[in-house]
Image (cartoon, rainbow, N blue to C red; front, side):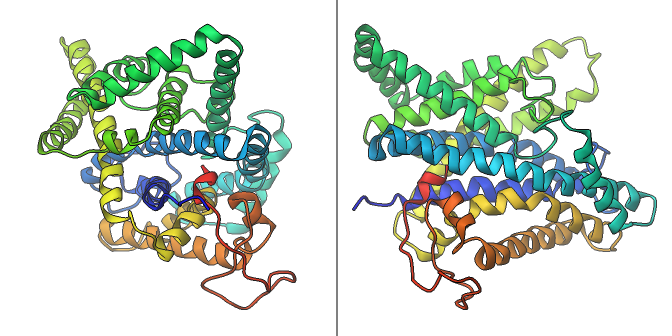
Length: 414
């Protein structure tokens, strides 16, 4: 039986759960950014949190996805790999969009109503589902499920490259004798983060905002975003090809910690110049920003893996449960987050208390739904590859769930 990589399960879960907190924080930004609702309690600290967390959470997810994709392909074979990708990515993307998109549209409508002092839930839901009548306009756009679309794209690109390489012996020799050693040299280099940050910064320069664009407006690939997420995916793919390389990427030193802190500080300070585009040195300032942002991205990805390897390298039933459920939690969370933000928006509480409450309640509600209606049902099999017995609630509400089903490698959810 293959050993389960518990710390990488934990990393993947962290990346997805951080996305929940990221979205939960959006209503506490001190300026209007087009989010569904704006809370009466705001803070510039939230702006910094959003800037930093958005720089690495999806990159971390795509790196782990690439690692586990290569693992799954070589463990189960090409046909099984394709079947699992269609089941765990394409099906949630298609059905999840049609179910969640109306709820998200309804959330934005109710958020707008809340700014006017009154929320009509039934009217908002009705208008949300009526938005489906506008199809095929905005097909598969306008929701947080864009990451599944890009995961399908980069997986397809990786498989295409693999097919071409295996069909041309010279290319296969080039990969094994030149590319693999080059990747190894870069990862082992003292300046690995800086080397990797240069091409990343070049892609960041092409973004429409200062930072990472969110490509949720069109099915046409956003090439700078695809380049960065695809690059992390391909690197994860290579990291699995060579034993011990992931651990080397995630090694921690005092110097690396200092670089990470400096990159975060530089990114936050330079980001303030977005409001002063007429500055005579704005081009130079932005160049410094994208380099700091890229360094921050790579350092936080690397150090996150190092931290979770230190904390969660041993088997844990709790970690495995959270890892198994994290995919569902991220898929379902956005409407719940916005509805809770609307409910909390006018309460006279500090923003930090509201953010904590919204995050905890969203995760708690989503976990409840997961344990009751997903984990031991066909939904759980679709998302996790296998039905598993309930943990929080032992009572079987559906026939055919009386037999305890053993766990499988949560990594295949990536």
